[in-house]
Image (cartoon, rainbow over all chains, first blue to last red; front, side):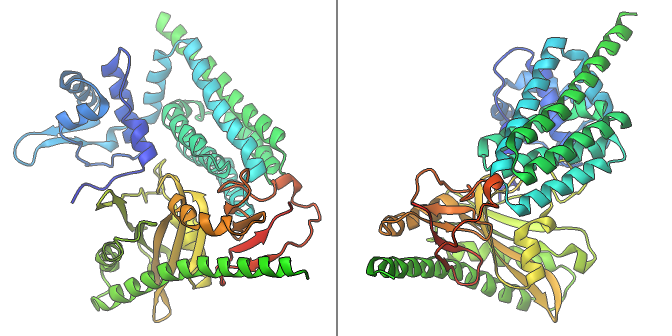
Length: 252
Length: 238
């Protein structure tokens, strides 16, 4: 029997071939995100190296380098012998450190671009959801809005907002928006682990979410998009400032 | 009522009956799988394992039914005081593949089945339930209609058995009957969301009216229920 498969969208986001340089780092990033998102559970065995390399569209040498970096970070453990292979060690994953590392790598323009993209995806989904969501879907959105407002830490905030964004996308009745929402949750998640350490930011974003939820309920597409955009901009500014502090620290 | 209207009503009724029959078939298959799983073993310790084979067999036995995309079982964790658990099979080409779902609430990709209509409504209302069309994220990742039946033994809820209908194939199979209607007609779910319609701009998943305009006092539509599944066939404004 073949191994259980996770969500197809998630797999295709994770296993998209890389088209440009910096492949080793990019693969480390992708696999780290896969661990963060529970695509791989603690103790899961990774596919055999030739198979994984083929799935990612990289040479076995590049993959081996990436696995070595993941081993160094404690995220992967390799056992030799008959029952050997590479196994995922989820307990070694540190979300904030992961996000800080990503912020150090991103130029201000790239960070802004990533934030703009994430905001566009969520805002467009919110506008469509305001026209198309059923009452039941509106209730589900409200549950996620409330969970975010009650989130006690960065991890809970990141998780609940991810669910809110994906719920908006599914309520928009668009498969492409849903795919884009999952992608943005994967790519932006580690940054949110950094940004949402701030309880003040969480509170301000929660207000925007509440406004967006109400606008969707009332069928006001433009208001829903504006509120979601406002939430995303608050995060984008927080991250831009955080990244500037990191690079000032590094320059000392 | 004019003769034309009566003729249309007859066609609507026949169409509704045909859709109901299709759903009834899936419900019956699920119920016999539930029966099979319950009688397979008296011990209640590993309730999930009873259903692993039963759901797999259900898909194997209906291998000619290509509208059936997958089937599975989810444990009623609240009633059983255990951790959430779920088994799901999907068709991939000619074979069956197990599909894993993250049932860890702490995971970003948590599949919260207990909050989903196919599980929640089947359990609460204690009756066969029809859900969708909805985009099943972390699940099928596509438009899905799910047919589900509660499994209870001696009044105690065990879980929910369910099967996914491939919406595109399901809709294709109904296209000819719809065309014969020669009127603006839609098959809608309990929230007036389109399953399939004769109006090209009202495609699967759209509400027959946008949210913002729903309070408008619309003329009561001519409607025929699809058995008691909550779906109906409605005549739209032309």
